Every structure is written in C-alpha cells, then in structure tokens.
Image (tube, rainbow, N blue to C red; front, top):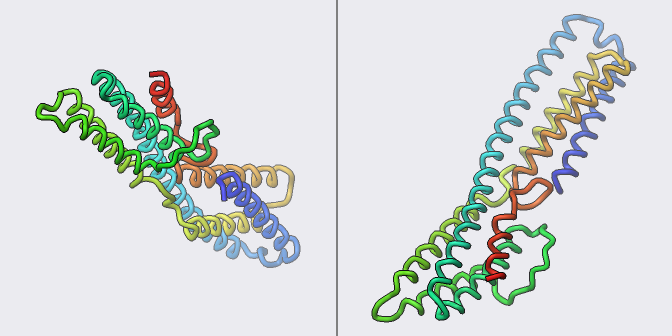
Length: 252
C-alpha cells in the first residue's frame, strides 16, 4: 500500500477507536465513576503514549537520515555521469561508442531508479548492469594499447566512482519498516485514542481536537512510510540531477 492509503487508514482507525471509547463511556458510565479507575486509565494511556512517541520519532529521524543520504547519492551520481561524459568528450572520436553506451546506461538507470517517473524513455534490450559491463569493456578497449592515454585512465576512475555510488544506493534501497512494526504502532495509537474517548466528555470541541490529533498522527505515519523508500511514492528524492545528466548526454 502507498503512504497515502496507509495514512488514511490510520486516521480512520484512530477516529473509530475514539468513537468506540466514547460509546463505552455512554453505555457504561458507572465504569468511570471512581476517580481511582480514571487515574489508572490515564496512567496506562500515558505509558502507551510514551512508547508510541519514542517509536514514531526514532523511526522518522532514522528514515529521514537515510532519505537525505539517498538524495546526496543521486546528486553525486548525476555529477559523476556528467564528469565521465566530459572526460570521454576530451578523448575524441575513439570514445564515441563509450559515450553512446553511457547515454543508454543513464537512461536505463533513471528508468529503474525512479519507476514512478513519467518520462518518455525508450526501451533498451540490456539492463543497467549489462550496460555497465559493456561500458567498462569499451573503456578497456580504449586503454588496451601500449600507452594508455591519461584521459582514458581518468574516465575509468570516474566510472569506478559511479559504480561505487550505485552500490551505496542499492545497499540503502528497500523498505526497512516492517508490517509488524507499523501494525504495533497503529495498535498502540488506537489504544490511546480509545482511552481518550473513554475519559473525555462528548462535545464539539473535544471531538474536533481528537480528530485533529488523529490527523496529525496519521500524517506522521504517512511520513514514516514515505521516507521508507526514497525513490517511489508521493515524497521522493529529486530525479533532476540524473535528468540533467541525461539531457547533457543527449545534447552532446
């Protein structure tokens, strides 16, 4: 499910939980007649609230750090691709094949990295790894003579840096928030709102405040799920660095 669907589902679950708590208060008012009972319920709600806040805050901070790292990797990758193209351009006509492979490699890389990006990329018979191997082989052929030009050595070094950046991105790609973690967090929040509905009086101000709190927490869960994958969903890292590199390659 997308982050938007999960956020809306959490909002509905919290609103329903508050409504269930309020219904129990109306149908069984004697349950909360004792101040000691209300105090115990408040303490339980506070304990669960602390656990939920800690889990939510720590998860968002951790995932935001990973999200920012992915953004830096994309910017670095875009600049490295442009640097490789400039280096191959200095190598002259012998590097024409390598530049064409770099163009195809970048197009497929953009398509695979940002699957939700609506861009008119033409299909390619090779995947990104095959194109990377072909680009490496092309540079090796350029440097297979008795004296390897310095520009080819520089191009090979830049390509190795691109490969390293890709490895780093792949290591950080993928969901790290499990369904169990999200389910436990939602369950804790539902218990909190059920307790609030049980303790608070029924009037428009309280109902509005509960709905606003439910919306705020649903937005927090939405951020949690969106930051979990930096390349798909509503909130993603910018694809502009790679698109800029791709346009530069196509115009060159």
